[in-house]
Amino acid sequence: MKILVLGGTVFLGRAVARQARDAGHEVVCAARGESGEPVEGVAFVRVDRDRPDGLDALDGTFDAVVDVGRRPSHVRHAATSLRGRAGHFTFVSSGSVYADAATPGQTVATAPVMAPAEPGFDDPSADAEAYGRCKVTCEQVVSGTFGTEASFICRAGLIVGPEDPTGRFDYWVRRHARGGEILAPGTPDERVQVVDVRDLAGWIVQAAERGLAGTFDGIGSPVTRREFHAALAEGAPSVHELTWIPQEFLAAREVAPWSGPRSLPVWLPLPEYAGFLTRDDGPSIAAGLRTRPLAETVADTRSGLRDEPHRIGLTEEEEAELLREWHAR
Ligand SMILES: NC(=O)c1ccc[n+]([C@@H]2O[C@H](COP(=O)([O-])OP(=O)(O)OC[C@H]3O[C@@H](n4cnc5c(N)ncnc54)[C@H](OP(=O)(O)O)[C@@H]3O)[C@@H](O)[C@H]2O)c1
Image (tube, rainbow, N blue to C red):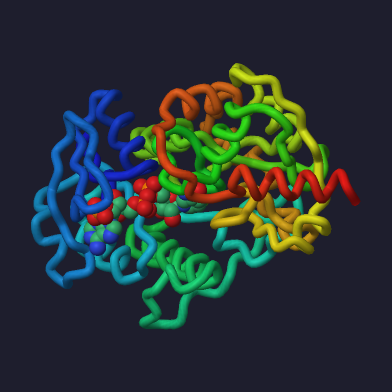
């Protein structure tokens, strides 16, 4: 097959291109070439989707397209210009489209989505809601242009694994590799849900091959935080000990959830986000998604880590201070 990846220079897009190439497909990646490099062995077409003529360099036909875009203008332009020239369109959407982040165990069939972005609104980076609403618009544009029978809307959950540019999962892999007393947020029985980038990419390639259509969550199975940390500890070189600290204590000391400086990544306040990382993966498994053991994702992430300065999460000093305060309470 001839597969066009709109993107393909970072993380998921690169993983899709790599797996499509390895499966023997002819792969074309199209991007500006600013965020990173495409993998070897694929064609690269330089395009700038901010420009009205930005996709003119993409001529010919494609059996399938994969788009990781977030701006409605980009996705509208791509879907319109590729209509009639591509047989199948995968749009990589996000779990951020859901209106209700609090109810655990939801599926695509049961969960309402947010309203689309206002017409003309095109800034998914404004805030989390804008991002979700722009993704809703993009989904509607793709399904409306390619038809529900030729579009695969893949609502990705938290994507982790090698080459992750966000540093969220890396924080935990690095932290466990360092060992010692580790501050674990929340309680051991809370649940968390991630998907390995390679599993998601493999499913997206398979969807193109099979012509899978419809809307699905691209998610792994939920695990407890106890299991999450056990997988992180597997194969870590140092001994470690977890100290669980409840969210009230952390919030009172201005530890941020999810990401950013002075944060505990992949941790979200409850009960507001009790449904965000606890979705039901049954329908996606039934549609062909296969996920590897978390410990394998951890091991491969660890071996791909580069020696980079601290970017997100707690610094060693911040974590030590919080642990001191916790024990002294
Ligand atoms: N990470 C997560 O946990 C997570 C969770 C849920 C959903 N998602 C979704 O999953 C997808 C992740 O995709 P990804 O990992 O490949 O990263 P990404 O950061 O979404 O990649 C964007 C791609 O688009 C290209 N691009 C950006 N602006 C462009 C422009 N003006 N013209 C042409 N190309 C442009 C970039 O390359 P250049 O900059 O080189 O042009 C890059 O290849 C996204 O759809 C994201 O919304 C991610």
